Image 1 (cartoon, rainbow, N blue to C red):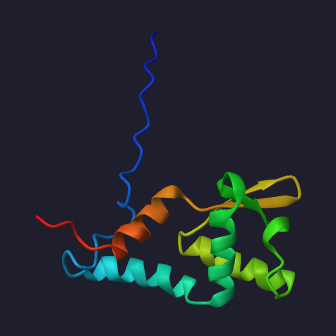
Image 2: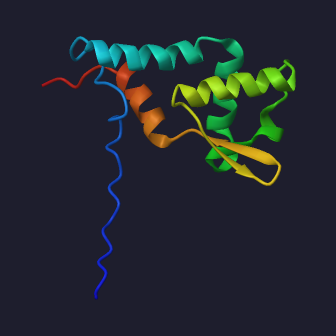
Length: 120
């Protein structure tokens, strides 16, 4: 019996969310999905944590490297959980530490949403 390996398809950049706001009105579903994302980033501590992860060398950060944001560790964990639930971060436990990563498609989708649609 032969086994055929199929290539994995990468999601199209920006496909995770919505078209540029200037292109067309959002559907109700797109607006709901986008509002969850922006609501999660609407807190200064969450925005700072998201920024720390996104700008960390190698594209991922250990919670031990980003927890100094002026709030207690349980509060950091709460905010990271909210960012994960909004689909902005993914996480992986390695031993006693949890590493967080911003998926490139998330950044691309956020950027695309806020840019002007290309002229025809």
